[in-house]
Amino acid sequence: MHHFDVQSTLDHLCKPSLVQLQSNLFAAKFDLMKIVPARYIVEQALKSGELKPDGLVVESSSGTFALGLAQTCATLGLKLTLKTGYLEPIVEWRLRHLGAHIDTVTNAAGNLREIQEQRFALVRKTLEEVPGSFWTRQHDNPQHPAAYEPISRSIGESLGKVDILVATVGSGGSLCGFAKPLREANPELKVIAVDHNMSAIFGLTTGRAYPLCEENWLSMLGMGSDIVFPNVCHQACDEVHWVPIAQMINTVHDLHRTTGLFVGPTSGAALSVANWMARQYPACRVLAVLPDHGIRYMDTIFNPNWLNKNTEELQRTWSEPELCQSPTEVAGEWTYFPWQRRSYEEVFGHAITHRERRGK
Image 1 (spheres, rainbow, N blue to C red):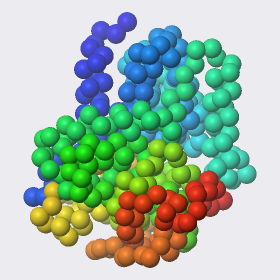
Image 2 (image 1 turned 90 degrees about the vertical axis):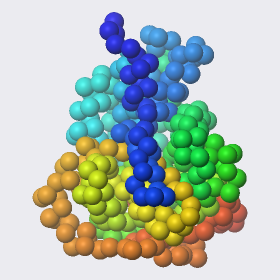
Image 3 (image 1 turned 120 degrees about the horizontal axis):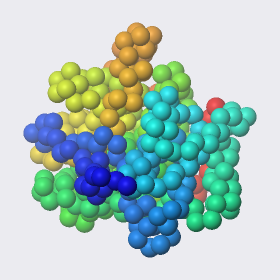
Image 4 (image 1 turned 120 degrees about the vertical axis):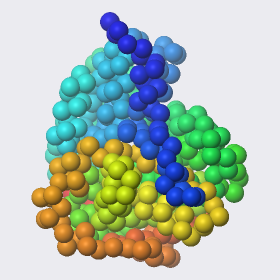
């Protein structure tokens, strides 16, 4: 039996800090953003009866959504099973410490899409074998983006008019969930999506990224994907930026050095673009969504030994992005493309093909 206030605990975990970083740049800083949809989806399922208090929650996730679910289920006293790929040691420890059962798929001929498919197959197997189990379906559940709308609306009311929203993209929930209320309040809102150089969300790039990105994007970043998930609302985006990992890390280090704020590389990606947008449009109010805390990266981007091994790449700097004519031109540099609120099909002339980016 819990002896603490469950709802106030979850409210605290879900609430971002609103920080003013420049005269026209504000950040919604989360410690763990994905707890917002995790909590909302689980509580809605409990409310509707789709999930019983003694039922089992199941999901395929190796990152921040898994942590969000683990925190939610631990607080609500629910059982949780996760089907995962590679897990960083600190993430695995936290998941197990929070009571999650973990089934890991580590090898499928080196093919990321097959690993994901095997994980989904394990989810379906659990649903068949365990009566009353509930799949949160983070990648296509419309409740995922809907979960962010109250937070976005509250921030919009606090700031007044928001002119530019900058957010990273993975499953698509946070970008689209933040964009909807802000655009309802200001139809001229510019939505800037931020991705990494190896992702396929906005089309297959060349794959010719720098080694730092090729070797670390899968384990390090809570953004991007080899698969374009249904919750990604391409037509909401005015512009897309692809940011190199070196740029993300340098931005995170600069933020910590100047403010003491301690965030992860995914936040560094959003902030790199937001800083540039704030300089380009000094009369506009820019809101950046920073989704991750830095504690998860103590063995990498905040570790002197790791940094020393990657000194050469980290010396690469970008003061501004390069314009590209098509996402298929994206390689290793900081690049942007005017998406202009079009669908994937309108940009490329064909439907989304769910094939993976690189055989790894």
